[in-house]
Image 1: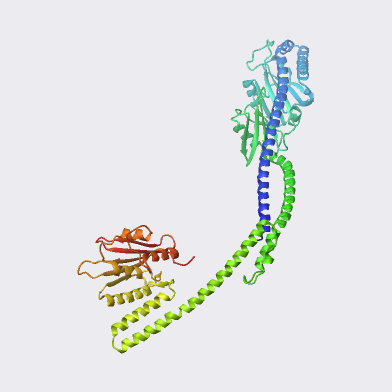
Image 2 (image 1 turned 120 degrees about the vertical axis):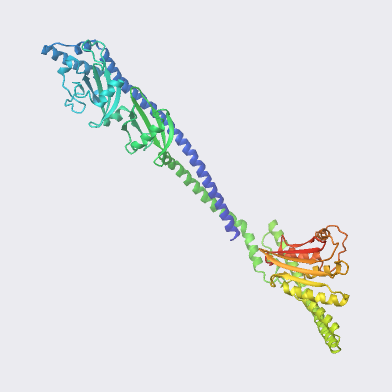
Length: 585
């Protein structure tokens, strides 16, 4: 990938990250702002509707107060005459008084709701009124007076008598009904503990929006009207299921919390609760999806502006990076055209006068010169190596001649030692730093032991315990260790030197031990010598134990090398640890 493209992609990724972070921050900012604004608006809406509900319920309460405290109405209700004309006059007077209070005490009463007064059938005058229910009122008038004989056993009527005020939904007429018990203080007729009458104000569900504020906070927000029992009487937004309001009612602790958020049907809702006067409750809910939808418009505009600015910035970066990287690209092209450092033209690298590029050109020129000098030196070394190969071949030929002469003159011992020396020399100069099977290393050690026996007239014993003959080790890993045992081990009197070599594999390691029966050799001194610490040992030339340890470390890495330990009887054990397969990295 070119430097210009890489720089451009990095810049684009950086701007994309900024865009994502900025989008997230702005989303959170807009969400919090609009959520806070929605909360404030809903609180305002709740308070407005609470006051409107209070006013509405207060008008009904004032009507009931008038009916309770009206002396004339009490006298009419107490009428116990058997004269038909007096009964008719009393009935008409009751209807007029009721119509007067019901019409004038409530604002726009004839438009929004109808009022019905059910007189107790214990009143003598109640017999002159028709027994009707809320469902079968045949009159157009919005104010009617009936006997309670047909409704007094109904559930709503009984609850009104128990609670004085009861709000319920008349599903047959689709009306919300507010019922109040009336006990006229001037009534002097037969006593009834359940009062003299029950006032019912019925509001059609279609007219509820005229009673309350119907402006929604968001498209999906709405409110529900509940009675004291938590029964839903009305929902302003039918798209919000009654189950949401039921869940909100329970979540509020049945009217304990006035404002909270809840999760229902996989969505979060903002909920407000209030309780106006006289037996009704209001729940307002706004789904968070409405808040998120209202965020999209300003956030979309912001994102469009930011993306446009980002594209302009990227185009500018692309142009600028092209101008900045052009000299470097031309320099790399000039370098790529160099095929032979011996005959390249330095003038072709003079691409720019920028200080950094001039320094780079000079450094590259020096590097080319160093490569040229190194190549010439390497060729001279190869020539010397080719010349050096002549001498070993001459020596091998000469030793073969000596071996033939010794055999022809029956000097078998001389022939044997000459053959062993030739084999050892061949092993040492052929790929001296290569990996070999352990059995080849053992053959070379046998040659060394043979020469040593003949020269020193001693009989060291070599024993092996090798589990796998094909274990690969570097050349001259074991021969220097055996040579140290032969030269420096001091055995007990009349005891032959015994050298034991053991080798095995353990998981990813190869463990080799070289054990001799010598005495009085301190293993820790040898270990400190390997670590290049000060000791009283004399360092000899050739393949010493330090040399072997360093070669193992270079080839096998950390955890590999040589360390010594003493046996129970003071004998010396050399441990060789080879980790991995020994391949060059």
